[in-house]
Length: 280
Ligand SMILES: Cn1cnc2c(O)nc(N)nc21
Image (cartoon, rainbow, N blue to C red; front, side):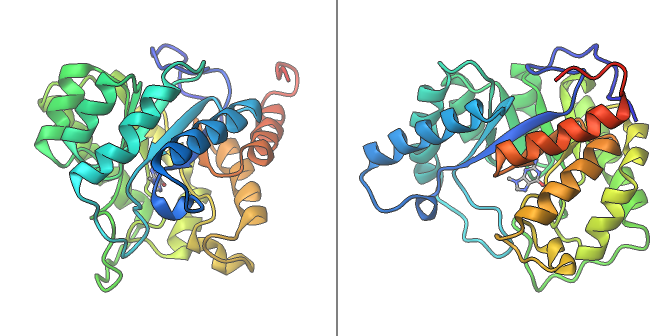
């Protein structure tokens, strides 16, 4: 499977699988230190991920784990804006994972290059931000985020239904003035989907090409790997194996915690996809 035609003005290479490093700036992702310590630590971790081969850094101030507590807007701003300001000077683009238009506007003003919306631009105000700023936006499929674990969502064909619902979101975004060229789609692994549905999506990723947008796959350390003998938050080996399969099945961007290991996995997939043309 080749990558989507390299004709979009996205801020990363389009002739190979791109690795997005996850930078959580939630308090539980730091040992207790002051605010300044946290910002310094976040920048150091971003730099380490860049050194390990990350093509883009995804900054998130609010956990989207199932059942996570929502964070006040002021708190989310206080967590992400200072970090984005520091990272804006680094040589790789910065993505921000937020569901809030206020935060989206603030981080774009602070230098963020990409919006990562786990709610798939369901908020009309988020569509307006994307349309007005023209920044690339990740449109992730999720019935709700964070998902209420009690909310039993059932799919007949998770791939078909996810593609159809993403298509509807894409149309709504285009109606609001968002250019299809700025949209990256994402099946939303684990958001209201079972482990087996996660593997079904992984296996049939190529079907998402129908939407004509680059595809982001975010499986790192997720609960689907309970099926493969690891567990949520501690699934490094399954994550790396799934990265290679996802890249080979057409994922254009892989969103991961452990950058070096997953860079190797995408390189293996890209080399297998084009043994003559692959360049290390
Ligand atoms: C923030 N976040 C957590 N999981 C994610 C996924 O699978 N995709 C995207 N785009 N963001 C995610």
